[in-house]
Image (cartoon, rainbow, N blue to C red; front, side):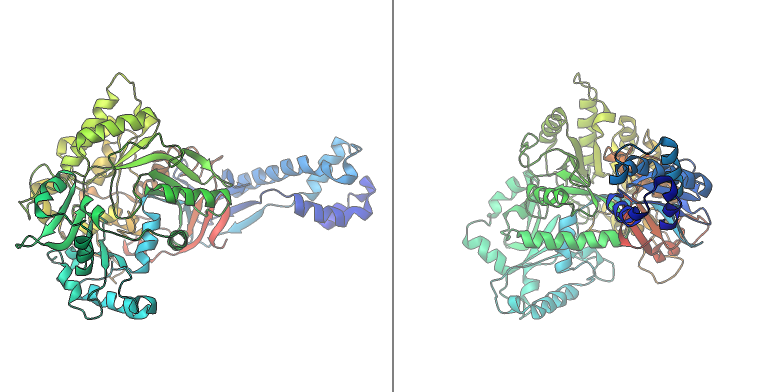
Length: 640
């Protein structure tokens, strides 16, 4: 650039100012302009055209997509436009002596060629991946003592013993609480499943005996505690007698008891509220967030919908956003829950602007949003807590639990809509889904004149429906927010829970997609219930197979290698849209992110291979590695 500028010196008569020009242009350059190209046109736009050769970025936004010639000219025009504003501000040009013709000549000569990055022929670029349903802080919490890989009761005990022995501050203090998450009794007995564990199981280990231990089930809908915790609850008067069980169940919880009437150590859903648990410190929250954010960026996520954000975490996120320390986009769903697992409130909080301030593109980089709330209708299938219209096939004594009664939900939804909140409601069982669809249908038809396009109500999980409700959710325009890895995790026991008839309208992702008037089906993981890697969800959506296999062709299913209920598979294009543009629509951001289109924010993910080829084996998806994760045009993981 120096040599080009020297050629202008006869025009400007400013030979002594070249060093000044060079240092000044470094100080004043605002936003790098660059181009990325794929020699195999493996840049997937999730728009029209579906694939392009190149994409050009300037100041954190996409300014062109298409051929190299086209995007190069647009990028150069952007640089010239930028320089045309700032160049006349040079001290030696501020007197206005530079004619327009001379300025044009200066700009033409000094404007550098846009930086162009060439992907390898095998690499592919996609819009930034979004997880439409996850739990950010809780994922970090689980990582401190992960139990998700345990496959037997003994595995859990051994993992806990190793944790105690490797943490001197815990080993030396028998009064220090031990908390963990991730156990799943449906995986035990070589995948055949087992009954819930008991408090007594934890006391059989001399290392664990006498310690307060509280372990959350993988889905966060049940807790398993030690005898010491039961003793603490009994001594403080917080352990209800059996005579209170009916009241607890009506409120949406359950305490499992033995034949003698004593608690076994398992507390389900709202019954978890009565377990004393230490509140997380600010340092713990920071550690949990950093662990999750680091993982998310490594796996190519540029945006996360946090599906249960309490006031403390909202304030934590606000501080990060204000100081420019939020590396990823967060779409928060507010809730009053202050301690995980789930303890839903039935009190309206939508007008508490101190605890729940509405936030739109908040912070230094505009990456934080809060305009949604998270409500709960029922529990989870794995703990027999999902609310069903008929009793469980493998446990006829129960039909599950409504965590919030329909009449309470109706009042809450109405108030939240009046105050302009999006309502995202956890529904797994067919009874819960029906109750919530009844509420949405009534409100959308009411004289209040609610517009589904403006309210965009969501059902989180949307797992089990009556067949008629599969059609109704689409007819109403309610967004089904689903987690494909739940289908492949649950497929080994779901049919035994539901029976051969109900399973036909469960985990029906293709049916839900086709029913949606806008063909919208946002995909998430529900991490830490499932893994953070979004490619696990992509794989599950398109294959309906387990991923626990070393075979390159992928895993298996109860129906064999063709997939579990294969008619419900998504195509690769549908799955990619489900983890990019559909979550953007579900968070009112489809005009800003979710696809590679001119004017949108430059969020994208580069993989070492193309996962969109239908003729490739499913196993190739899980072999893919992230080369770079980019948010607002800046690299937040890897390198370009």
